[in-house]
Image (cartoon, rainbow, N blue to C red; front, side):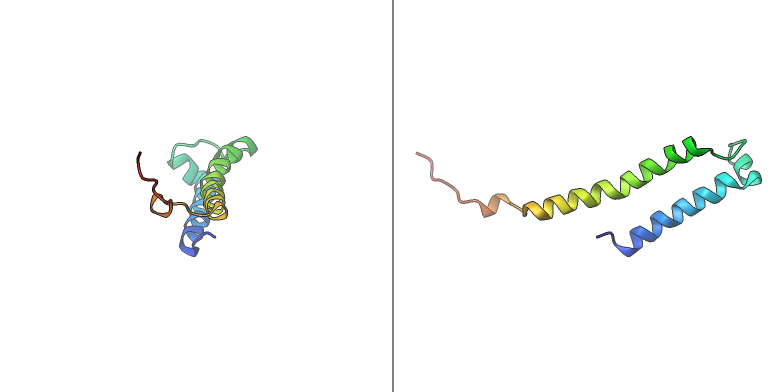
Amino acid sequence: MLPAMVAAAVVGSLVVLGVVVTVPGLSHFFGNSRPLGPVGWTIALAPAAGAVLVPAVARGAVDALGKVHPQDTPVQPAG
């Protein structure tokens, strides 16, 4: 599962992004002359979601397969 601090940072970053992009004065100050449309929000949110979900799924897959370390495998004598 995602640590609470990481989840809070992700949500906080998305909230700040939303405020900066949707408030007309702020969006103009940061170089965006108009608020994002649906395509822009998709481009912004898809990588953010992927950055959170892909590691979580990968960690779950590794845990499901079991951790195999070289020291856990028996060594066959040569020859």
